Image (tube, rainbow, N blue to C red; front, side, top):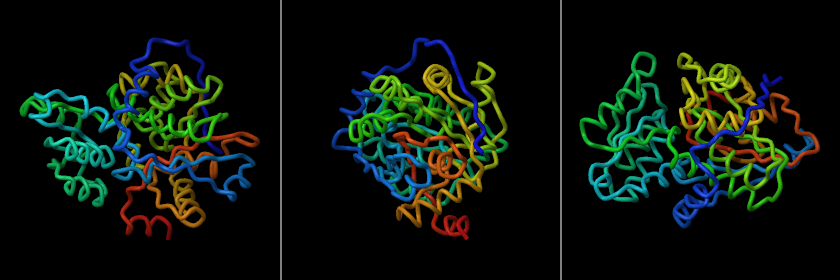
Length: 330
């Protein structure tokens, strides 16, 4: 069963509001894909619920990250565009920043771990970005990013702890709700909290009674621990196949949003992620990376109670090397 932790916190001033998400949607209109919402009768019957899968694995760059990256870069002034952008990422934010920078005509440098999936490294370089490698287990990517930003005069755009990034990610929930209508709950993967923060702001504004549920890998439940403690908890780099959720701590901006608007956080095992990957491939003909399966795994594999409910599920990304994909499913 999924591990659960329920939160009841008072509302506090938040770094983004619904108007920021609406503004991001306007910037992304005609640039980002309006990704499809897919259904599965098999999934519905297994859970006794109506599930609506928002397929961000079919987004530009292969993940929801394009939304936040483009929204942030599109607001650069002339000086920032001339100097370019620096980011750090295990892969999806890297690709999103690289692609957005190319579309907007600016240079990009990305700090990526040595063990990042080769597919994500190749794609980042393919979009024209410089890739700077580091060891995620012995070096601090944030420190490296800040040092390069200072040295080159570039603007640092972190993968989640940035208001424009958070607002851009929230457009995924905005689109989902506009298409399918009322939801009893929205289930979202959690790494550093950028996606769930933006989605929670959108969902709670449009559907105040909608529960927002986050899902982390068992080995990397820093957000669950942080919400329990009432402050940001730092952990060692988690050992999990969900490489997009190998974050060590929530963000200074994302944490207060999660503390105020996220109703529940659950965790799933790597084995449950693999089972969800197999379900997507066999039943829905979708290639979904492990991190992208977090939300679905909580429902389909870990026993999150959803019977009789209308549930939105964010499928966050599909960037997985095919050799690795085959190995995981074998």
